[in-house]
Length: 572
Ligand code: SAH
Image (cartoon, rainbow, N blue to C red; front, side, top):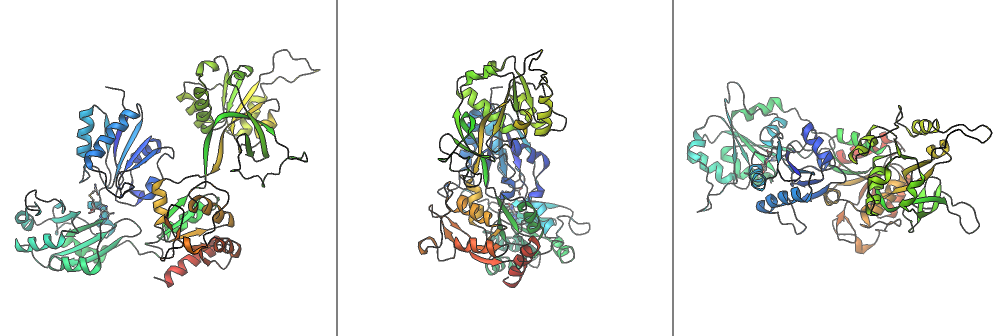
């Protein structure tokens, strides 16, 4: 078999992220490329390896769908581009249920690319289940049939379905992709003898916070769709089982059902509030505020001094104000100089404290024209098992890993290797230790190992760019939830500016506000202007940036959540 990447055709399930399989999640977490469809929820996209290349084939920048033949080719192309790589093809529901997964698999076979199929929960069954409709039921339906309502006969544009047989079929009929044609389908079924009073249900955006179920009968199908404005994605289910919904509709309409709220993810408290808002029915879009970036070359840190000679204070030096060789760290701003990899010869032990550190170091080493042979004879230390595993990927076995997997544990372990000198003379040489860390690493290790040298191999910055899917999710949100003033500032610098900047843009300008009350950034994208704020200070920060505000009575999460629920209950 050629040296191609491995493609996984993964079913994402019908929408509720909890319905993704464990195997699917596992693969997404390590994917190098994710090729995804429109119906995949942002929460599932958020589970993908943050470093994966995300390719939206449901929609192109020009808003045209990518043709199936092009998707097939794309998968083969990625398999070739990423030898040994993991290419996830993520599709709504199950890949082999009207998902065209079979066509993609055939193309992979033809190109000699190996693949796995990871089945997903198909919407055909799960969406009715969420509406309280079992697809089969003793005494009512002994079979169910999943039918595409989209298939057109080549010649005359009519549906190529066998209506005669479908009309005779006593089982439950489940139509996917059929809303646009349902008026026609219902009429044809009646013409062929199906009872016009057959109960049916349209279930829109099933299993998501936007799920809606509309009941009808075969004879009222078309007019109901028009009157209720049923829109895709929706399933149509027909048959006696539909009546069970009256007793079995278990999914409660929650106070925040149908609302999409953005929560910034910098603050520790954010995930707490996200979970609470989701439990109340909202779709929560968490936006990260920081990211890591490998430096071009490791930097050795030395404390920088301002003009009067004192060390720069920590907080006044924003992380983003990194001139080429100035790095911000928790201890202040540091003047630093690029290292020469030849100086690696001066060290006996290399200590890594994160997988980011490992990846960045090797990237820099290889870019400088060296390879792992420069590490020959050196001892390698890792803070814990995950970093140890990452090192193994580069063919490096660790010599030292502390039991408790902390910086302090590692520091103590390495400190124990250093002979305690009495009277200055030691019987064996002191190992020279090199720490490979990020700019925000604290000084725990350096304090325990004062003789060690630290190279900064990566830095942590405010997020410079959001992936397209995340931007789109934010664009379509109902409101932003701000749990601190810094959340407002971070959000504005990341989301609204569209470029990395420490100066948030002031959106309180007429030209940047669209008639629908959304703010616009320089790329003309529209973002929600409604915000829920935790208390007056956050409120005034949000107002300064042009947001409409609804503010909690007290500065607590409880009060903020209560306010959001109150607002939507009053305004629904
Ligand atoms: N492979 C998918 C089906 C793809 S065809 C599966 O197994 O579910 C796309 C159609 O699936 C949509 O037009 C709609 O009819 C249905 N569908 C998918 N997700 C849905 C959802 N969350 N709610 C209602 N219908 C859905």
